[in-house]
Amino acid sequence: MKLEIRTVEVGFLPTDCYLVKDADTGRAFAVDPGFYEPVLEAALRDMEIERLDYILLTHGHHDHILGVAGLQERCGGRIVIHEAEAAFLTDDGLSLRSPAFANLPRAKTADVTVRDGDELPFAGGVIRVLHTPGHTRGSVCYQLDNYLFAGDTLFQSSVGRTDLPTGNTRQLLQSVRRLSALEGDYAVLPGHGPQTTLARERLYNPYF
Image (cartoon, rainbow, N blue to C red; front, side, top):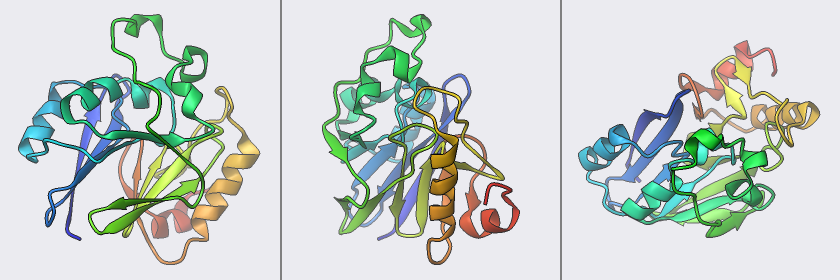
């Protein structure tokens, strides 16, 4: 598997949306399309992505899902989210979707709901689901080869906040310890901010 990964900053925070394409097969997926806007459209064209296998959601906050409907209309792709998080797609109180975004199309309900340990086939390999609650009850990380798409569970030298609906500090610290215990090293691709590595976070992240 030869992966091309593009980070596209979208939305008002901004959020790191990831486009992933396997050069050998042309298969592709996206992670956390917070907004569907010209910069994302341009990245899809530049990577020559016409169809997506999946739209993977690490969690259901609005800044990670507002672009789902537009992206799915453009490229297809099954919407994947943890089963405990599926309600965030339609519940504005959970997703914190502002009335200011009322004109944006809503994501449909999830096409695939996952649990811890589930595996999604992709380009001859598998995307593994790690349930990492804490930022929200259904937050997950997706692991493919030596890449870990961490959402808002883990950042460079920090972790996600826990003061929003369904957040839980104890669970988040347990999730961080679980990530720290993974064997080997991984490139960590977070939902916001710069990329890092699990080896670096083991050394410098105070929450570890």
